[in-house]
Amino acid sequence: MMGFIYFLYSQGIHLFMIKATKKDKELIVDILTSAFEPITIPNSINFVVKQDAKRRERLQVLMEYLFNNSLRFGEVFLSDNRKACALIQYPHTKKITLQTVLWDFKLALKCIGLMNVVKVLKRELALKKYHTKEPHIHPMILGTYSDERGKGHGFRLIKNLQEYYKDSTLPVIIETTTKENLDLYQYFGFEIFKETSELQYPLYFLRKNLNK
Image 1: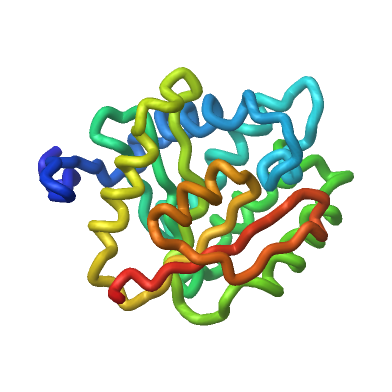
Image 2: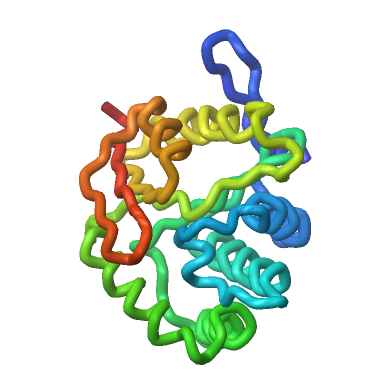
């Protein structure tokens, strides 16, 4: 276990972060589903997930999809108390394989709904207009158990992540739809470089160069 725990020091506080593996998938899907199920306002998650009686099951399929891709083309982290998680991807390493095609098909069938696939593909094309083509670190999603919100788990996890990547020459690019997250990322030094409402909800793109 100690091989997966990073001892970090920040402002005199000892912090820990666990690097997740395949065996943590069920836990991470549970955390992210719990975090986003109560949120019903228009946002990126609800745009992708078909809104019907099976919404929770569809959310679980999306979180499993994000976990699989992040583990394959990035890294997945848990807070040391296993109450929060972060999924990171390195877009420049992504490639199409038979496995990724199967993941995409499951997402379309069991999460998006076949009737909504075109709408979601248009969203992806719109997002690509704002994403940098240079290699970068892309935090896909961060979540905390819904009954643990406000206890600082996510805040501490972001501090850990900044320490973990502090020597990276790659910029971090992130997007968010909520003012709460926007304020949090700006607190950590992220700067808005683009914002748009063309997807029926506000979307902010932020950037930070960690080694400066």
